Amino acid sequence: MGGLTFFMFICRFFLFHLFESPKFLLSRGRQAEAVATVHGVAYKNGCKTWLTEEILNEIGGDPEVASTDKLSTIEIIKRQTGKFSSERIGPLFANRKLGLTTAIIWFCWATIGMGYPLFNAFLPQYLSNAGKNQAPTPTNIVYRNYAIESVVGVPGSMIAYYTVDIKYVGRKGTMAFSTLISGIFLYLFTISSDSNYQLAFSCIESFFQNIMYGVLYAYTPEVFPAPNRGTGTGVASFLNRITGLCAPIVAVHAGAVNPNAPVYAAGALILSAFIAMCLLPIETRGKQKL
Image (cartoon, rainbow, N blue to C red):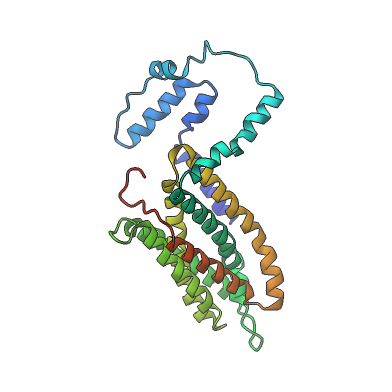
């Protein structure tokens, strides 16, 4: 694991060139670099841009003549806490349709945030649990099955790339169907303690779970208004992480009563997310804007 992480570190710095965020560069008064980044991104995508440093300075002000006054500590704190004001969150509930969508999206992120790690984070333990009357599954078999399950899930994201643009399916259909199948196979996983049986159903579950998460990641920023997209997506991610932190607590206490209880809980959470997805009022397929 450490070797793989180090290899990806080398690839990140020597094989891929990632541009710095223009927003960050502008916040530091580095207009020329921000313009160069925009031109670099445009060139990478086979396009051209009209943006120049002169135009940028005319719009936002020349950093060389801008005020050099520094903010006080209180002003800095107010600016940071202002990100959580009702002015940022309020527009996400501007009307009934958008408010319902926001609430459902946040609910889905919260439930999946707990359901996903309840199963996946403890999958090696589940795979090694062969039942009361059988010897534990050998460690090499456990991690072989874990590796197979992880690899089988990869094509799911690729298939989702095509299904999200199919008429009458779209983002909502792909996301809801994959979530339903994921929840069902979580329950089927607990029927038998045979390692081959568990491998088959965990592979199917992993495949559809990758579709579910991939589409959810794409759909979430699409459905929020552009000025408040960061806030909506940020809150969703926050809820996802908070519930994910609670997953080990649930797994430890529920697993002490019944080894399959965490999997049952994960299945219930995933299926509740499926029901919520069916109620989403907005489909973003083929739309430039909402």
